[in-house]
Image 1 (tube, helix red, strand yellow):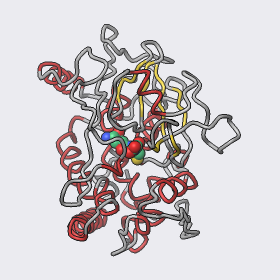
Image 2: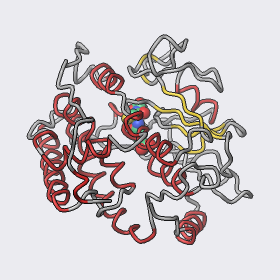
Image 3: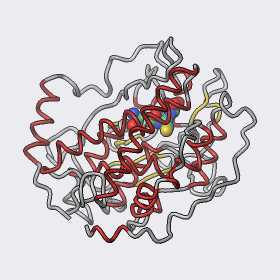
Image 4: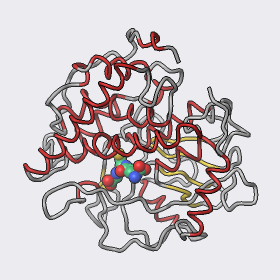
Length: 360
Ligand SMILES: N[C@@H](CCC(=O)N[C@@H](CS)C(=O)NCC(=O)O)C(=O)O
């Protein structure tokens, strides 16, 4: 476990963002327009390729008590879906850093439903009681029925997608951030005064460049790559995404033949980001998104690596395969019109993986 050394780097990053006007005192960026996509299923280029829209709320929580969003125990709430890989990576950081007492969480129901009677939008909804859907709970803060309502509380004229994760500020009653890549950084470094595992640094200074480099190709080809395969509406963009996906998986397999984790023998942010896609691969992406050239379980190193990360204390709590399968197979009728959920393969990620041989 490496002690956090990167305060100056974070400051420099923070200042450069401030100078560029990237995040401001505004509650959300004013760049959104009414014609923005309302759901991932609409994010399509003219060529039939899936093109993800950037997140809108991009404020940062800081350990600096004078900042607009200071890191305080009990002030923030994380809304997640267990189904969502982006939300799950935030929840994984929360668990690994030991922030469960400091930051509360609520999970939505896995399957998208109508969010308003007056339009056709389908999205994340809260159950009406704690027993309606195991592991999902009603919104304890705002009594919202949908994630859409949270966005509407935060901004009356919001017109973007209503995505999870949502990092909510109970004090200012607004969304701090809906960008998981930035939420994980805040959880990693800004809450160390209240984190039970303050010494765990998943983005250590000496590995910053390497983590950033790995994140870039893993995001493009694997995390987002599976969506580019699954949401393509034409053969060519699907095949292009498949080539990139499998080149990247083969590359991971080679790397993991020689070392325990993707950036060496230390667990980092890059592993958590890769894990959330791998854990869903055979159960969902291989079938639902047609990523079927090779299965995760046919890659010995990648498969054992996924088990290794799953077995880190706290990580298995972030994986709810029932929610994952209910969501993907049930929420995209254009891909799976009858919403049938495949029975298999029910992989066991808690079996021995043998990766201790690399040490850590
Ligand atoms: N950039 C966002 C992406 C989050 C995202 O796409 N979440 C999906 C679930 S996996 C979502 O909420 N989609 C709602 C919709 O498309 O309407 C992040 O990483 O936080």
